[in-house]
Image 1 (cartoon, rainbow, N blue to C red):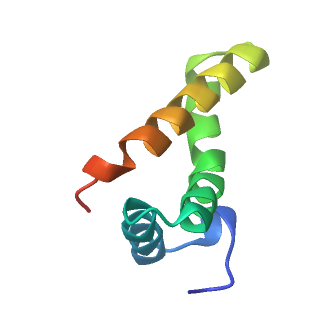
Image 2 (image 1 turned 180 degrees about the vertical axis):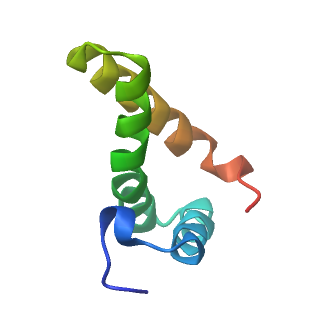
Image 3 (image 1 turned 120 degrees about the vertical axis):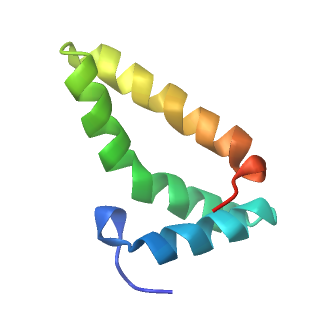
Length: 74
């Protein structure tokens, strides 16, 4: 695994984290969520101009990722 963090992860590294998270690797799930959070938050900020609303939407999206990672297909 690369030492990159956040948006610096490659798509292959994100895929590997998702595969590990599917196998109940909690550390991989946490790393996956941390990696995608900046991008998710930027998307939410483009939709919700009020920062607290964007942050709430980001948290909801991350929760959805966490709870549905088992159905991820690459």
